[in-house]
Image 1 (tube, rainbow, N blue to C red):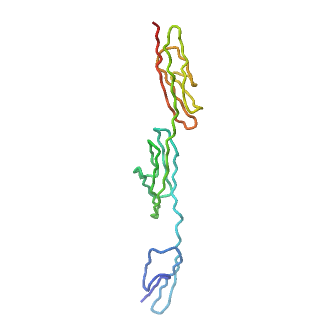
Image 2 (cartoon, rainbow, N blue to C red):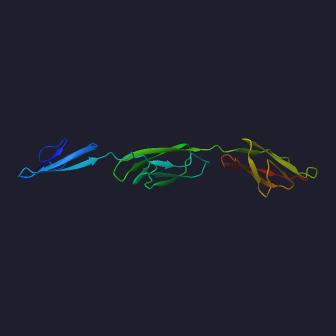
Image 3 (cartoon, rainbow, N blue to C red):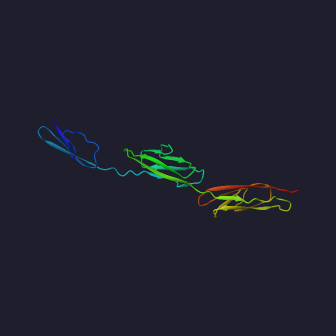
Length: 193
């Protein structure tokens, strides 16, 4: 008849132990002749489980952002996605959360925020009608912040644009620091009576 014991913490003839803390455990088994064999098991704590999230911190209005989590075996995002990456199009400043489960079953939650960048403001000052006397007009924009770049429909750059024919003229302003854009348009009429 064999008898066995775990040390520390075990009782006589207890063959298995569970919910153990990190440490060194000795298993002994003794036969009927009182011969004993020993074996040692060393349990260590797993490395800290730290999931990661990579994502842009801000986007222009209407733009999408791809959030990517790492460090785990399975993922559940607050928007319902269940893959490592998810694409979002926030309408306002939004915080996204992901629950990451490691291959050994450890679960940690991480979060990231995606904010909405400010768009530039641009207006085209109302022009007068073109006439036989006023045959051209310099369209001038009012915009903010400073440092914007401008592109006019039909060609032309800069904050102003000279026109000599009736029609609809538009300009797109880009903020080079954020890459966000805004557009404005104006109708130029002609009165030759």
